[in-house]
Image (tube, rainbow, N blue to C red; front, side, top):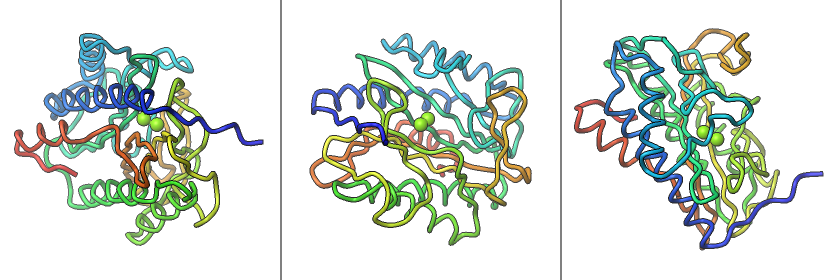
Length: 266
Ligand code: MG
Ligand code: MG
């Protein structure tokens, strides 16, 4: 039996929005600092301090035993990379995933950053992954199903010859970081959980440059592509409301910083 789907009141959705906006601002702090030579653990410390200074609690730290505030996944790492002493290099791409708990509700969002100048191939992968997210979001309206989201994401990625990771999926968001329903990045139109007014979900395509198969490293966390090719990941928390998908998280703070720095936004 599928778990009952959590629908939030207008007031509760505002609390998810507050948490999600703090995630966006935290990722903008990451955007300010990320560069060749920066160590991933330093980004993690910055993020934790920023979240706590702004009245939130890191959403991942301590959950399922997660040791960090951010999950930073570089190049062939798909998701769940643990920050540490790894130094970022020119040409890397790094997915930075962040959650915040504030006012009793979570927010969840991820952005893939270019470290310095990246190859055209990596830039294209990031661009298409972000487009996949936007196409998935466009399907997240009442009476559509999670399969409609997955179908839209998968179609766009595969049209570019990319792989869609099957093992990790989007999810409901609320009083818990991960709630029902699951929101796969692949699927069939008209299948899956029905979307209804007030549902809050995270949509998070993980797109690979090569084959779609992944494996987990011995650290018990980091998920990498089996073929070692790069992967990108973008995530928004959205609410199904008033006949449309209302995006509760935002990339605008991040992309303002990236533009100030003269870098390319995905
Ligand atoms: Mg996330
Ligand atoms: Mg998520």
